[in-house]
Length: 379
Image (cartoon, rainbow, N blue to C red; front, side):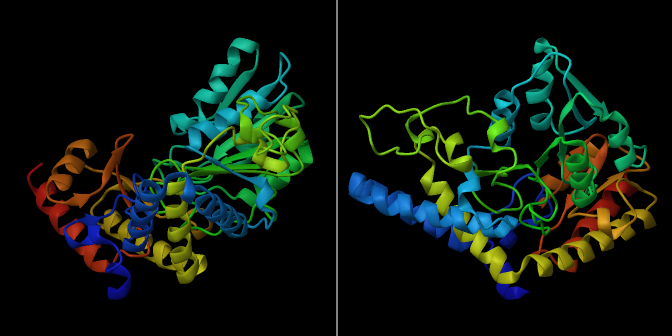
């Protein structure tokens, strides 16, 4: 564990339990980012092809990591919001269609669908249960013959509830509905296989559990639905032969490559590749096991202190996020004081949110609850 912790400079001064906000970059990731920027500055266009080829290797990494070996189905996007907007704007809607989502989602997975209402598209939001859980039967009740898309977060950002994507994928496939998954709160810490779980579109930013800089998000679009999502932001890279600068033939590139309109943020993408190397080296199942164990310990200690823990009791629906409503005092005030003591946690929707990763330890948890107990005594 000490070897792993040494890879993350943030841990030298901070008890870092806020991975659901930003995942700190490991040393190797920072080094490759710095090196890529320096090479670009020193060599200019002479370094472009090298970076371009390196980006394509990261694309292959991403495809392998999410369970679809075809890298042509992976596009790089600046962030989750951009990817979801590409899908929302690219579908050929007709008045009376609807989208089914979840009430209480992070706004990135709300506004792209809500904006469609001016075109006569209904956005149906399924309420969470009081526990913060989302039941599949509640989603199924809102799906009908006019539903084109079910758009959900894999893990809810403020409760930590993890959806059973396999069962949801089976439901959407049975109904002929496009399943769109915002994976940002799970990708990098929980195993996923887009083919086995019948996911049509997966979108994720890079700056949380993928331990990378902002601006290197990923978007997967399955071959099954690629023809139903037309590119709406068109540029020189959208076509089959992007380096033929004079033909002007608007033939879209194969797969998800058509959604990349121009020059990519190659520096950040190379950093993403280095962080993926570390995640794959440790092993995603090993990471999940460690994270669920730590999250279970956090939950237990919250319950001992009479906090109301949101989310699910079952392992299938757990994640690296534990959200708990304090019996006294405001969660936001508690989080603010804890952060002033270099204990990084968040407050979301009235709950204190603790989010652990594989480099955390029980000692981190001890320190967090020691300071929390002192604060609670004074409230």
